[in-house]
Image (cartoon, rainbow, N blue to C red; front, top):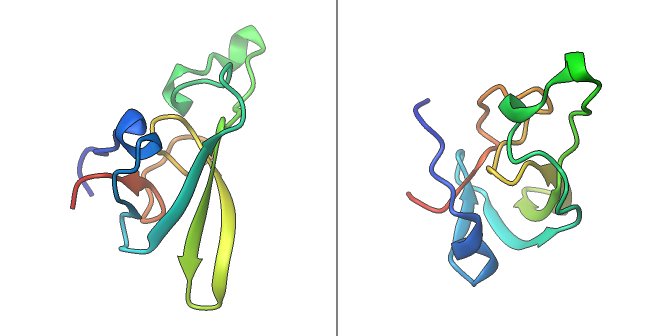
Length: 90
């Protein structure tokens, strides 16, 4: 898939955001500023939790739904790249 290209600051300031598979993201909000930036920053052996700090509203075929993300735009709880990851470059 390639490296994720997501700029959280740009997204919060109104830049267009989509998922890797092209779905439109209508709103992004930070719900936990203390959450890890990325799943790769979590040290589960030190007792850290995989906690996603963003919520994003995404337009799907059946309407709008809200999903959790890391600050890096990753959607998978354990950091695997998926088509649901957020991007500000397309």
